[in-house]
Length: 136
Image 1 (cartoon, rainbow, N blue to C red):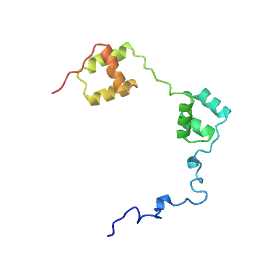
Image 2 (image 1 turned 120 degrees about the vertical axis):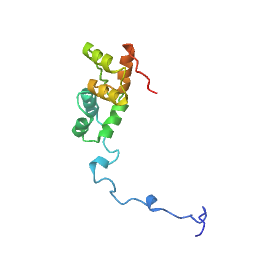
Image 3 (image 1 turned 90 degrees about the vertical axis):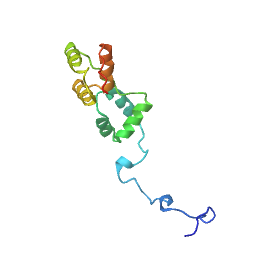
Image 4 (image 1 turned 60 degrees about the horizontal axis):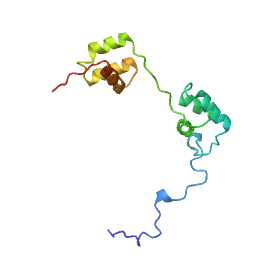
């Protein structure tokens, strides 16, 4: 097999670099590229409904992809609202009873039960003075 060199590849154009046919990629509105012109009304709608509607619902309403809505929210400086779990004394009692001997699976189950991340669960348990037993 001949060895390829830069001079032997001169003029070589792989299929991936071939010019695209007319209208390529514009048939599907979800893949039409950066053609949506964001109006002030669109931006005001995103500002007003941010935190109230899902990204999917906002995207459908404006007529763009979910990624486009996410990118525009980021450009507008809007972040996803943080969910705050208000810990009750009943939650604390469950943690006191189960956290000390909890393995990773139990931690994930407890976190799911309270609707928080495993890290948030650990931080709260630490604040209560709870420590897990070390295994091994």
